[in-house]
Image 1 (cartoon, rainbow, N blue to C red):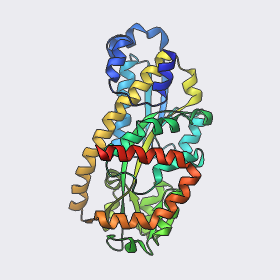
Image 2: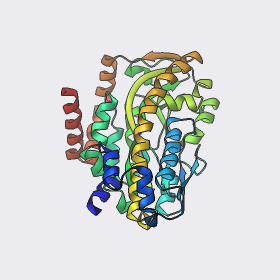
Image 3: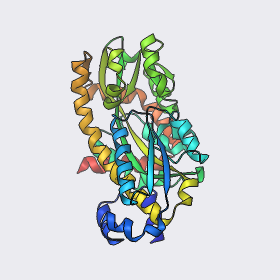
Image 4: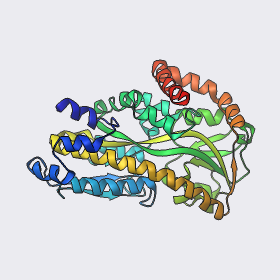
Length: 349
């Protein structure tokens, strides 16, 4: 049982979670009741950068509901939204120091700590969510989660940020040439910075909480984020053009402070893993629904929307390829090859 718990807690996405739960003690309520001795009264401080209305925020609400139900009300979650506790990096550092219990950041800020997480930042790797899930929920995703404990973190799986698209205040971006001269806010991430520079843009890293003001003041011309984020952050108020570039698929990773995790009983670890897993499945489905709705809303709000053709996307990929090749060596060629092999396998089915 201890071996299974370790693998589950590390974030392996397994079908039949409910069956496993039943095998370990019946229904969710029965499981909580029969193992109440292993569950203590706890309050978990959980923070994210997005708003409560964002699919990520709704995923956290679902996690709270599930964990409190599974623990018989003993393990309570206090959610903090809108970067109230700081940006992704600051909250991750708070987890490492044992000052916060949970955060669900994009994987990109982790690259400075664990370089291999940078493989998720390669542009134009995934065409569909299914391709991304095959990597995240498989051996490659697990290998990266297994690197977290040595950095005082525990990963309970991947949620969905989604495909990133470009907005700006200057003109539509249909081709690689259209990037030239645009000042684009990016995350503090080497791959993103190098890729946008290669396209001729001027990337400007800044904290997520500062983006709206920077767009409004003209400090930057544009930014890139998934559709749900563009909608909930109201970027349509300060951006005229939305180009559906789908240049990068970004996952969220559900992180727990290792200091806190190690203080939990096996029963507490198990139900927390289950809650994170089930909330993640809910969040992924909701994120895709919200993306479809967001596109219609952004158009209604006046954004001029254009879709980049597959041919032009391939040309963008070719321009950026030297950046991908360079960082593949840095992050581990074998790992990158394993990721691409998994993607090709899905495409072949």
